[in-house]
Structure formats: C-alpha cells, structure tokens
Image (cartoon, rainbow, N blue to C red):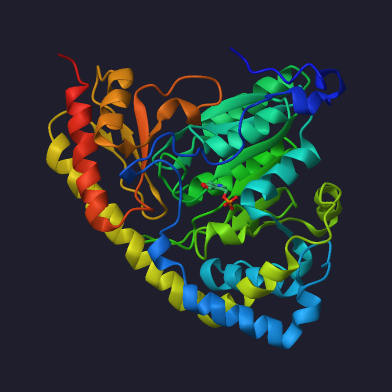
Length: 404
Ligand SMILES: Cc1ncc(COP(=O)(O)O)c(C=O)c1O
C-alpha cells in the first residue's frame, strides 16, 4: 500500500512533497543486524583518518576559529572549492575555477539541487537503468517521466539515448537532463568508454539538453586508465558534474558539490537557503586534504582493491559453473551479479537473513521495474576476510535458492 501523509496536514502539503510521500531518500539503511554488511555504499571505517582529522580540527580552530564558527559563503567555503579544483586537475586533468563549484551536503544533496533547478512534474528525463537507487528516489520526488536506457560494458548505450531523444522530438518534447554515472557505474560497474563520452556530449548538444554527470568514486581506480570527464569534453556548457568527499574522506563529513557553467550556479543556489554548507567542516576537511589528499587516496585504492579481490574470490569459488555473472569493476565499491537462471529471489532473501549477509536486490536500481535477476554487493565496508567469508555465504545461499 502507498504510504499516506497524516490527515492533519495532508491538504497543506506541496505537490512535490506529496510525490513519493514516505519514501526514504538516500542510501538504504540495513534492514537487519548483519554480520556481513554488503548492502549500502558505506566507506571503510578502519581507513578514516582519525588522527589527521583531530589535528586538522585543532589547526582550523587555532588559525581561523571565528570564521569557521560563523555563517559561510553561500556558494560554499572558497578553500574547499579551490581544493576541488586542485583534485580535478590532479586526478583527471580537468581545469575548473572555484566560481564553477557550489558546495552541498554530500553529492546526494548536490544532485537534488540539480533536479530542483531543472526538473518539474511531467518533464522527461533520461536515466541509466540500472542506476544508483538514491538518485532515482530523488528524481522521482520531482515527478518527471523517467525514460530509461540500458548500460553495457561501455557504459550508457548512446544509441538508446538517441532513440529516446528522437522519440521525444517527434512528440514535440525536449529532455530536461540525462543522468549518468561515468566511472564504475553504481551498481553495474562499467566505466563509460571515451567513444560513448564523446557521443553523449554530442547528443546533448544536438538535442538541446543537459547532462548530469555523477562521479562519486572516480579517484578510487584500482586499475585501467582514467578517462576525461564529460565536463571536460563539453564545449557548449551542457554538463553539470556532481562530486563528493564521502568515499575518499568519510561520508559523515557530508560534503559534496556540483561543478557547472558559472551562469548556472544561481539556479542551484536558489535552493540553498542555509548560510553556507557547513563552513566549519569544510575548513577541517580542506585542511586535512590539502596535506594528505594524494597519499590518503593512494592508501584507499589499495584497501578497496584488496576487498574487491577477496569478494570476487569467495564468489568464484562457490559459484563457478552455476551461470552466475559477476562484474569486475576497475574501481569503486560494488559488485553486480546476474543470478543463475531460475534463482528464487524471495528464497534468496530469506537464506541471506539466516546467513546474516546484507545485500541490495536488483529491482531498486531500475526506475521503471525489472532487475529481478540481479543483486548488488558492496565490498567497501567489511574487512577483506569478511568480504571473502561473506561472499562464500551469500554464494551458498544463491546456490540453495537455485532451481530444485
Ligand atoms: C553514484 C553515487 N552518487 C551519489 C552518491 C551520494 O553520496 P554522498 O551524498 O554521500 O556524497 C552515492 C552514494 O552512495 C553514489 O553511489
């Protein structure tokens, strides 16, 4: 049954608040008390730089305590915006100015700002399917028609994007934006190829629309080549790029941003009434990252690669020969599995509860239904030994949930 707002204030709700009432926005919370947390995209708690953040906090308080403790710039702390520019240049060769950056409460919030700025009920937007469930829930709250397009080994299928755009044009409509996750796509894993990146940017121009490029994991590349972001390939000011410190520093710092053409920034700022997003935390995070960004990220790459490999090994040992297809992402936090034909997802869910393994079922990643034959496993949170053990347990559950 669709949840309803309490009668007391239901008539007063805005149309937007009514859309998707009661649907929690953001990363799904664990539904049980798992021993093996492979559900959400939680960063590795053992790698948080506890001492470094204590030192950075003391430094900030000593050097600029008063400025850190008052309201901040509406667009976000300039030092953090400069750091984002430095990070982009160092990791992706992307040149952006601090004026192009607007800071938000994590990239989830940054994406929501972009949807608020451009999407009204009834509008057409294009999204990958599968795509990050948190974004899908947030887009849905804005009430658009979501036109899904598949993802293959090269990322978003641009021929399908063209077909969608062309169909809209024939109806006299225009797509508001194309939502895409370019690196280690969440959940299915591929990195969008250079050819597809060029094609997508050209399509946005040809059909007069925007691209919302979500990159939450790009620095966490274990192998393979870093490709230029859509933002760098775009010559027409059509790409908005979302980024975050959640996966490379800690999700609790709640700092993310949009990079966008300068003249677009006021469209986002109009939805940010708040005295600057966390001026205090922005300074602490910036102070830490200024000194340690490259070494810290290098360490994280090693940490997450080991976890990915441990989980892959555990799955492979038990599932070989069953027909299960498991992704091997070049970075990021997730594995995506096509279950062996005939797997009973309901039974799998029960068996996983018994084994205390949390995972995310495929359907939440599909905006318009489907996905029953998939699950997502996050290797980010648990230590490598538990990634291995838990992978074997879920793999046994998958076998047991197969055709009898
Ligand atoms: C692809 C993607 N985008 C955005 C986010 C949002 O992260 P945050 O709001 O913590 O920056 C996530 C988190 O899991 C994600 O996987």
